[in-house]
Image (cartoon, rainbow over all chains, first blue to last red):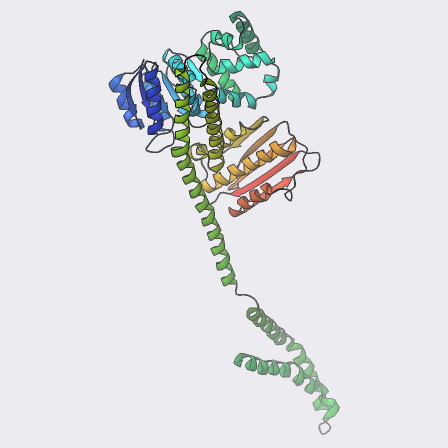
Length: 213
Length: 290
C-alpha cells in the first residue's frame, strides 16, 4: 500500500512512517503542512492518505479541510484523519465528504495501538469507514431515551456498527454468529426507526447522524 | 480660610436683611414713641411684607450654602470614577494575561509531552509485536503500554482543563458539546449563538459550564442535565440545570466562588437556585458589548 503521511509533529510523523514500513507498506511522502500534502497527493497518487486535523500555518483544522478538498477533487481517495480530541463536527464533515466510503476518523492516541491503527488504515484504504470508539462512546452516552429501548447486546452492536465494523468483524468481536449479528442489527434499526441499509458506510453515517441530534 | 470669613459676613448680611430689618419695621409701633401711629403702623405693615418677601432670598441663600458644603465635603467624583476605570482595566488585563499563559502551556504540552507520549506508545506497541510468543518480556511490555495509554488520556484531559483547543478552533457551542459528551450522565446542549463571541467571553462561559457540570457529577446525584442559552439584549445567557438533589452551597468548596469570580471579572453575573431536594439551576449572564 502506498501511503502519504501529513503530520506536523516530526517525532510522530517519523514514528508512523516507521510503523507502516514495518508492516510492509510504502511511505511515498511524509509532509508537515497542508500545502505540501496537496502537492504530494497530486504528485504520487497514493492508495491512502493519513493526515492530522491540525497543521500549520493556522493550526486549526487545515488538515481536515485539505482532506475534504482532496476528496472533492478525487471522491474515491481514501483518507484517514487523526484528531487530537473528539470533535463530533469533524467526524460528520469528514463522513459527508467524497463519494462514499474510504474515510476514517481516529483519535491520535489510537496510533499507540499499533495493530489496530494499521488495521484501520488498511480498512480505510479498502473503502470502508472507520470511526474512533471514543467518538462513538461519547455519542452513545448523550442519548438516553431511545437507546433505553435497546437490549444491552443491541447497544453493543450499535456501538460497533458506528465504529464502521462489518457484520463479520462485529461477530468476531462479540463471539457470536454473523446471523445473530444481522438479527440484532435488524432489531435495533427497527427500534430506532432507522432504515435498513446494505451499504455499511451509509449505515455508519445514518447511525452517527441519529446519535448526534 | 478667606472664603470662610467672607461667608460668615455674607451669612450675617442675609440674616440681617431677612430677620432684623423686618423685625425693626414690625416692632416700630411699639418702641418708636416720638412718631404718630399713623406713620409707624404702615411701616410695621411694610415690615411684614419685607419679612415675607425675604423668604425667597433666604431660601436661595440656604440652598447655595448647602451646595457649597456638599462640594467641599463630598469626595471628588471625577477622581473616584477614574480609579474605578483603572481597576477594571487592570483586572481585565490580568484575565487576558492568564489566558495567554494558558494557551502557551497548552501549546507546549501538545507540541512536547503529548507528542513524545504518542511516539512512546507506538514504540512500545511495535516492541510487543517483535517478541516471540511466550516471551517473559510480554507481560512487562503490556504493562508499560497500558501505562503510556493512561498517561496519554490524562494528559489529554489536563490539556482540556488548561485550555481546550476546540474552544479556540470551533467556538463555545462546539466546546460545550464536547465537554458535555464526557459527563457521566446525558447532558442536553442547546446553545443558539449567531457566531463567535469574544475570546474572553467564550473562555469564561466555557469554564463556568465545566465547573457546573463537574459539581453536578460530584455532588448532585443527577440523572440528566442540560445546558441551554443564547444571546439576548447584548448579553450571553446560560442556564445549566440538573435534576439532582440540590443543596449546592457556595460556602462548601471553592468551585462556585471561583466561578462567580471569573464571571465578575468580565462584568457578568451568576445566580444559583439549588433548594434541598433539587433541581439545581445555575443562571449566568455575561455582557457581550464591545
